[in-house]
Amino acid sequence: MNIQRAAVAAALVLLAAGSAAAQVPERGTFMLLRGGDTITVEPFTRSATRLETEVVTRTPPVRQRLEAELTPDGLAPSVRLAVLPGLSGEAEPAARLAANFRGDSAHLEVQAAGAPPRQSFEPGPGALPYLNLSVAVMEQVVRRARVLGGDPARVPMLNVSAGHSFTVSVARAGADSTVILLQPGLEIRLATDAEGRVLGGSIPAQGITVARTDATDLNLAAAPPPDYSAPPGAPYRAEEVRVVTPSGVTLAGTLTVPTGDSGKVPAVLLLTGSGPQDRDEANPMLPGWRPFRQVADTLGRRGIAVLRLDDRGVGGSGGDVNAATLPTFAEDARAALAFLRSRPEVDAGRVGIVGHSEGGYVGPMVAAEDPALRALVLVAAPARTGRALVEYQNRSVIERNPVLAPVADSLLPLALARVDSVAATVPWFRSLLDHDPIPFAGRLRMPVLILQGETDSQVPAAEAAALAEAIRGGGNREVTVRLFPDVNHLLVRDPVGAYEGYASLPSLEVVPEVLGALADWLAAGLR
Image (tube, rainbow, N blue to C red):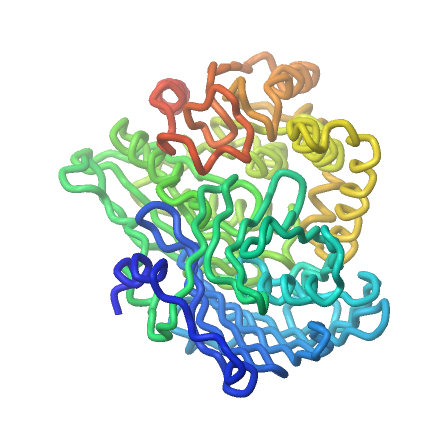
């Protein structure tokens, strides 16, 4: 069935209710939609005693299969989760988890590379499992809230894939509507019936529509894969490549190489921001935002080769991004640089790095130990520790919300406790919190360009000056700083810059001024 046609029909299709629904398994599909894009497809089967659901996303291409035993009071005491890379469903799971909830505690058995095999948590009494992007799980939250009573009802949750606990607030907004406050600034508004079934809804802050249909044959895998080829008429070619790291992980990517020049060309490696991202740095909640594709195109037209890679566990890459750490990503970057320097088309003496956000942490880690590197570009890069930055981000989100701002001082400790809960079980996040970029900045010896949007609310504009000062303090005077008005963390035109508003921006294209400054500086520095 055509996914977009089904999405339109979903607003008109409501599954039959009645006493038979409690006896016969209910089947259907939830979808998350934004504009003309389908972000997730989630076929599910629910009975009074069991829930089976599968969340399928295209970017990154992954399937998350969850099976949960249900009780009459809306709890899920036994849960199993399998995470499968790719869309076909034929790959072996990259991770398996089994969770058992008893009293105040939850116990996880994990089969995943780099993860502790057994983990215990205390999410609180009556906790439910949470699965990112799953509407079926949110429906269970609504059903549990109906049992608890209260308006709002507070439902403890455990993110079984990330390993941290939190609490959601569930309030009724009339007889047929429910609002779930997932985190400060992030509401899920749902149309619900008397039994707590989710019939549709929205996530306003992200411009997402929640749809439901009784169709079960929707196939996101049939949608075309991301296009990494060179556009027609481009003065460069795009080649699918593989980079093998010293630990044996294979990373998939695209190398774009200028054509029409028989000589060797300069090249740069692009380093993505935080979270699992493909080589274009795409985000499933922001369809159309593919900044690294724009960067590769711009530089390719200026005679510069570009290597961009899928993160570990994303797209065609092996490995597990959640089991990795910042030093792991630095290892991946060094392997990618070695690959670039080995290419016959590339001048090994004219190679640079462009790191965005978390890539601005990883880039200096590599560059500080690579004196042969010709140029380093830090885009929206932090100058403070990861912990200080996360605290700033949490406070900013709370203070921007007029309802939450008056109680910011009491909410912030709760938010930071959640941060520590995640860090205790996720190696990547723990390494991010512990990382201090300043010692690495003081050891940089190559020319450095710092690009920063002035309305960036994730890495504030003042970070650029602090980073430049640290680099100069180490004796390197070849530092250039460029600030861009009305540009946010995504490098997109945005006079406000709050990430809650990203999905409603009129354009998710990187602004030409940023691309131009990047290309001009690299073209001069890599001559």
